[in-house]
Image (cartoon, rainbow, N blue to C red; front, side, top):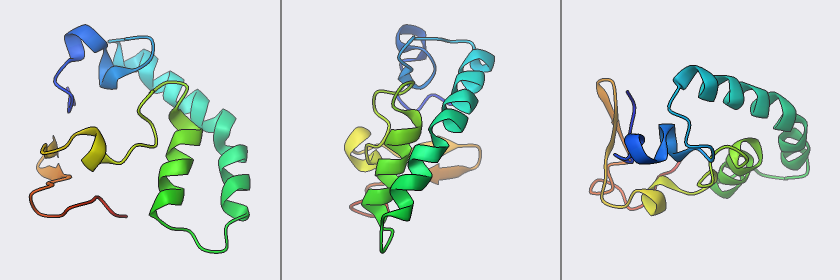
Length: 102
């Protein structure tokens, strides 16, 4: 179970707004939100001359904030001093870089 916050039992999967612990329910909600919000996200991007990291965060917020209150927040701000493991990879090792970048 991917639990970078370490509070699955009390806050649900990835601290979702409904505190759901059933990954199947969360995945359906993620997919539905993505489809519903994609036109707004694309419209936002179409107005940008250049797309930078702040735009990536804005799109993430547009797509997922109805499910994840933290959507659109940089990982270095959200999980300071914490590397996020997923499988054999580690993301956001703030000891190695001061700010996540795409």
